[in-house]
Picture 1 (cartoon, rainbow, N blue to C red):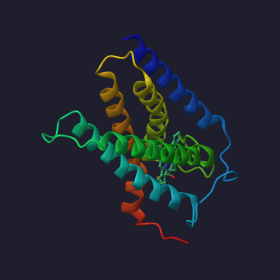
Picture 2: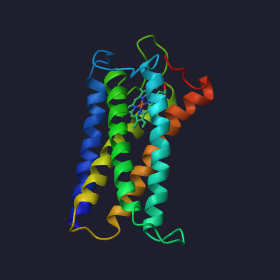
Picture 3: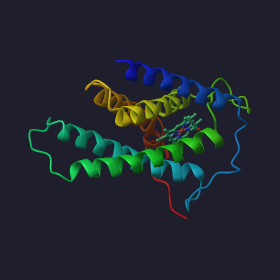
Length: 183
Ligand code: HEM
């Protein structure tokens, strides 16, 4: 029981620190990349959709391995789940870095006097929580001494936060402005 408690405490501290950094750091596009897309935002929207799809696959794969789909899981599923999970984590860290570095944790009013939308505030807070949940999930995967509920709970929390962060950014963006164009 002490491993999950410590992991959740560490995750909360990390999420808080990320939020503090997002407030004190001066946002800048220096040190970012659009990865061949027209803008950094276009790049984040497309990668976030990929992250959302991978997160859904991770949930399905986990339910399958835990025998919740009523069909026996194939042998390759564990390896596939681990590889696609690692890709999802890398992409999430990449997108989060770009949000944090180029935009930060927005709240109150912007420099031009316009109020920051509730969606943007909620998205930023969710994004910080995603980083904390990633820490908890990595501990849950690595720890050999944790109770059986820890891994599915850590995975479920990460899934819920990640999907919410994608819904309040990329999904909103595509709904409001359409799909980004390449080049
Ligand atoms: C520390 C964590 C994060 C912070 C502080 C943060 C902050 C922000 C801010 C301030 C914006 C601009 C929103 C606007 O102009 O209305 C934004 C946009 C965006 N974020 Fe994040 N974010 C974080 C994590 C994430 C994560 C985990 C994802 C997805 C996996 C993500 C995906 C996006 C996308 C696609 C956009 C562009 C669409 C939009 O304008 O809303 N962010 N983020």
